[in-house]
Image 1 (cartoon, rainbow, N blue to C red):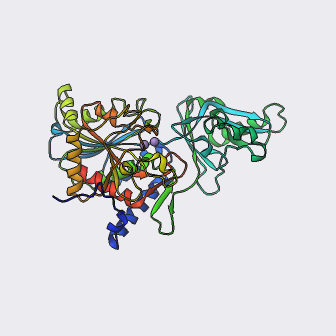
Image 2: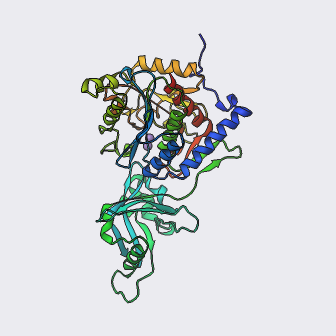
Length: 453
Ligand code: MN
Ligand code: MN
């Protein structure tokens, strides 16, 4: 029997030469254009929704349609010839990324400088966000329900924002702290201005900011209470290296899977009904109505049944879910050559060596893991092999080095088959994450093969 070299890893670039290599680069440049324009979960949704409309998807389509949930998560569906009661093929990714959110009452002035108070979102290393340009994105809803969209920092001539850091000359006490204690969440305050409003004695700089906001956006201070404003790394998406083999940018986790699973769905020649869902809130535990722990998934299945003229009874809903195969599409950690001590070489993922299939995640004894059953791993393995997909079997890092989870366990709650699959990332959760273009392409191929088989 043919071996798939899952255990004997090979550098995938050797598989892609000439015209094949062009395909890898072309797909990556489409991805980079997407990532540049998708700095929040709402913008990710918008970009892929617009892309789907170009592929003849619509809200009320019969065979190709999308369902939007509270402007923060979306499902793309393509109906197949096989009845959904025999199971569908679903890939779930997440469109939120670690970042810094504004507090509900954010604006204050101190020592002549106006700031926004923040509360970070997801697992960030706080020092990554100091002394660097930052952008502000999000929405504000006024009391009369007017929506104001904010996008400041990434267009030409935009101002940016920043968090100041302590100078080395006065850092003696800070240097003696552990890394965990040296940077405090309450000190992640965003500089937003320093000119005082004329003839004002108290809080004159703050008042100037409010005046500008009112003139530009028609908002008052209290409107912050009904806003979702996100501070994200300013800047574009770049090729990395002389050979341009890697992509650097903010938000690969997990927009790389949102893009590759959704474009794979567009391209797939599917027999089963296929679905790609972008979930929100993964980075804070998949909670909330737009997270993977909500029943939005059931709403989607009911909608599929209705459009296929099948009675959406509870029994039929259960039939679809228990017969379905899912991929939890999320990134894995690539082996970091500078930190070999946290990786176990034999079961770690190498950058540029193919997409990563992860049977179990979790930490401290697989705690919180989905742990796909062997029968399902075998089924996935066969699909990848027959479609010439290069992949690696890996886990996040060394046992007891730490750990993490994905949406896999929440999807498995429905009694469906679930496994994790996605590309490996370097500098995960940093403002400038790295993926390999060849891993991105192989991930797209893996998702497409999954949808088609
Ligand atoms: Mn993720
Ligand atoms: Mn993450």
